[in-house]
Amino acid sequence: MSTATDIGNFETTSTLETFGFLPKMDMNEIQAQIAYILGNGWSPAIEHEHPSRAFDHYWTMWKLPFFGEQDINTVLTELEACHRAFPDHHVRLTGYDNYTQSQGAAFVVFEGRG
Image 1 (cartoon, helix red, strand yellow):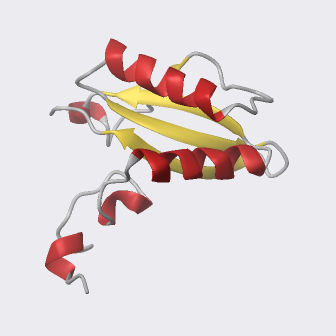
Image 2 (cartoon, helix red, strand yellow):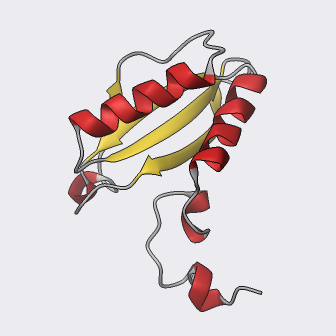
């Protein structure tokens, strides 16, 4: 059983997103999240930002959102390309829900060096 010190304390731990309190996701868990985004018909979009600016700026979008994308590997390839191009930036995947005009999901895939 995990304790609060193993996972993080919401009152003292600075996190980037909801999953930030959990242990880092492995590649299978990331793929499952991408499958969830695609399975809901949401448009995946990749954003990145330097850690020093992550909390007070809109994040820069990596290309346009992948409207209608159905291939998990395409999303993974683009995530890795963004991370290679900006190795010191945080890289976040967002799933935009066209129906509700909002984010259905968003999580940081790669944490940058800050």
